[in-house]
Image (tube, rainbow, N blue to C red):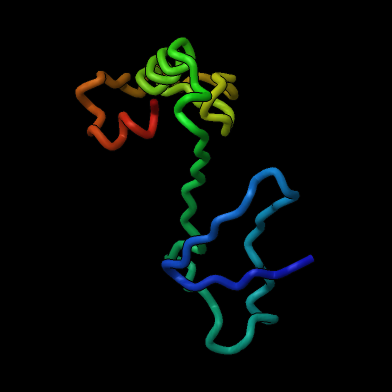
Length: 111
């Protein structure tokens, strides 16, 4: 087991084909080193997972499915070149999106 210590603003990149896991290093406040306590009103961590594969791997049908899923707030697995929806659909009270809601950059991430 390896402990990777990162600072605010650090970016970590890894090959997801290798074994990996992440958990916050939480201990009771009584065991935390002095001066090394995250105030309860601050985020412990904010993470955005991104998975990329070559565009050539993603057939047009999958691109259409991903675009439709983004509009309907449907999530999928981390494989960008295959559409495998997971989890429950978003509740009906959450407004659906239109293509105009997405910036050019966001659209490129979806497709």
